Image (cartoon, rainbow, N blue to C red; front, side, top):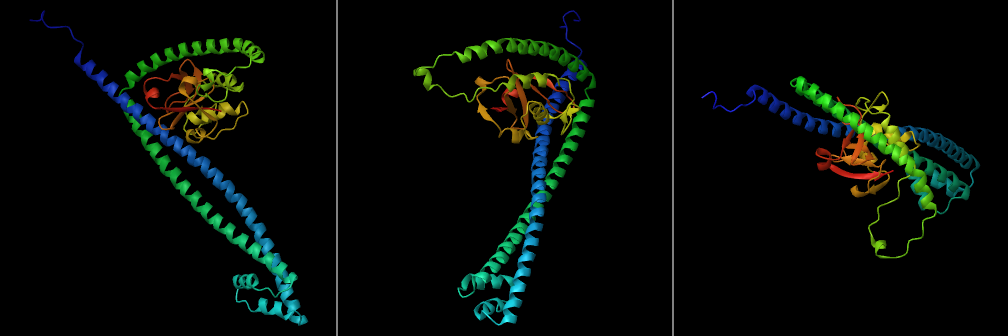
Length: 353
């Protein structure tokens, strides 16, 4: 009977492997959710910074408008005294002194045709600056409310991020041994991908002079059936090859929530930092970055294009060969990944900056 029993692996090991796969699936889902929340936090920060800049500018303009209104009101007071003491231009005096408030005065001014041009000018200045002060106070009130809402939004998202991070740490601690094995496999795979990328960049740099020369002597295309082909958008700018080379330098840099420096990156922070090195300013948010540049179809991707995933919750830099450089999620590092599996299933689109 013993000889007839089929050889099978230790059931406890099989169960542990199944548990590890299940937990890793949960971790992947949690990472995707976490990255979306982090990018939403980054977007709220971009909006908040813009609103705060508008607030500062409006506060300065409001002070100027108030000072101008005060000067205009002083001039109006002087005019009233002059009219009253001189006893002249009774029509103007009747309109001016009959008002019960500044708004009433402006209304009387708008309906009266009897006052002098001098009084018209004085009242026009008062009305203009009074209106500007009121409008700016309304804008400031709305901007302040918007800023407060953004602060609350960021606080809520921050709490969500911290809660998800705690859940992620708890999940990972349950399969620490399996993770070490997976990390060793991933390190070997990344080393191979680095070698492939370095070879691809070297080949592109060697081809660049020949491509530039051929483009200067290329014949003018005649009208044919090819002219009806779908437009693929603008050609990649020369900076694209530099973008890939720069991004390559940061492979292995740790993922840091909100990071946008060589000390650590999140996905949009890496893209923003790399493009800044070639003089291109991008916002620190994958959602906002999707609004930049021009759309590119997947079959026309070129190294340096931005690729977006998971409902715009994640972004990376395409490097060719169906791969891209990105900062995946907390606990990981800047790495090269293939647009396959989960990334292929959640692919949204691409932009050429």
